[in-house]
Amino acid sequence: MNKLRVFIALPASPPLQRLIGAWQAGSRLPIRWLAPAGCHVTLVPPRYAGEAGLAALAALGNSLRGEIKPFTLHFDMITFGPDRKRPRLVWAAGERAPELEKLQGLLAAGLGEPGTRDFLPHLTLGRFRPEDFRRLPVKELDQPIDWLEPVTAFSLFRSDLSAQGARYTVLKNFEL
Image (cartoon, rainbow, N blue to C red; front, side):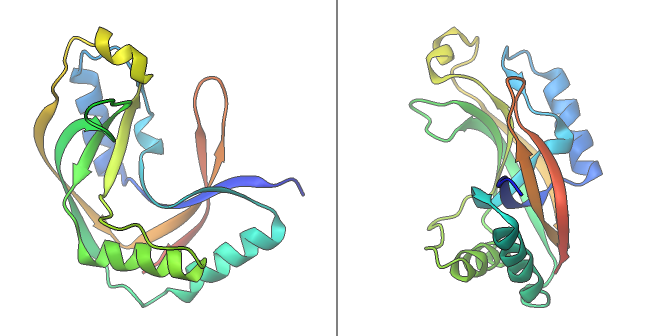
């Protein structure tokens, strides 16, 4: 088996996908938009894994069942990220949630990695090259939103890269 590029994330629900799509459709920014169905909050960054690595990730996900109670994320701002001085993304930033930080920390600990300090939940909506920022018609983007996302599960994703962008496939869901 070849190694797969995989990551763990919270997939956007269909109602959130509709909000994302409507916002993207109303934007006039000339950037590469992500398909709303592929939007997610990354908990464990992409890595390459073979059969044993996939089994370990699945076991880790299964081991966390019941460790975190379902919770709700609140996305309150669409802005440029991750670096406001040299942005390359348009994202919906969310408020910090203790349950989300605990979940991300448990996943990182289970992988023997340090957790992400000051974990900022966000959904990447679009991408552009940093050098293209000067050509964008808007240099400040701080649009308030009020998007709520109930979280009852997280997922192990496969990521296939191509010239058209990444394509994401859910390999396994883990209920909270």
